[in-house]
Image (cartoon, rainbow, N blue to C red):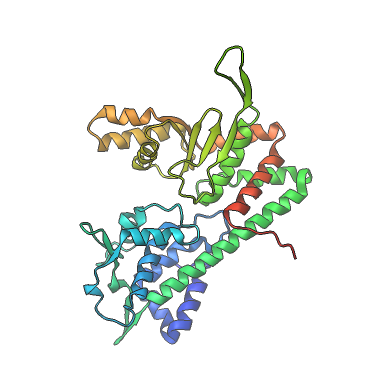
Length: 370
């Protein structure tokens, strides 16, 4: 199970537990799970980050520490942490502001059980009536011989180190794009290859959203619409695509807005129909276009959403009412095609400049003025 970031994990364990570090690494299912979820740490900014499940662990372990249970032994009597507070804290963490509640509610436990099907423990405990949560203390206590070690503080340190590593990766990504900017048209093919490489299912969600926006902005910007309130007084206006803010903004399910058509766009990587229907409900069934991080055909994507929805809903008319609200599906092949068209029209540098600009905004990058 070892990867490049495992060295960092073992170093943190070593500093805390000394000669028992390796045994704790081998015996702790929670450490091994975190080790697996941090594989992308040294793969650069493009790799999937897996913050959702890691942050579900983080906020619960942090609550455990803050409430003093490293020293107290009565965690079983604790009333639990409220969902609202955990969710709010999760969104305060770097890259966490757009995370949904899936990891806290079920996804993290479900994935943990896939890694450890014979484990008698699940990491997150929940009271459905009070909506209060606990971390499973059995996974925080590791027995080595006759001794017991609590790994709560180490879990926080490991995830903090992972966050720092990913932040560094994003800064390096920005530096790389700046270098490509300087190369300009002298390295035309290298720039094009670089951007195409960001259109992949395993690319970090934030970068995919930034690149999608940059491509679509210059796909639409030279298209015009003629409109007006009177036939004798019509206006010709270019289509303009706007981002609603950072990719981790709490935007209510709208990532891009197009003027003057008033089209809404949402970027996603899931095929869970509930997520699509929730976004549609948020805007009161206003038509919305979905940009999906998938290589599947648009027909297959639509069929998958519809078929899964029909399994959950017994009334076909309800499903179709939602499906009618999906204005367009834009998948990776569609984005790639539109990117190539934009390049052919001479917008390669514009797209790269937009990627650099949006990346700097997203990752709080400040120019070195020294």
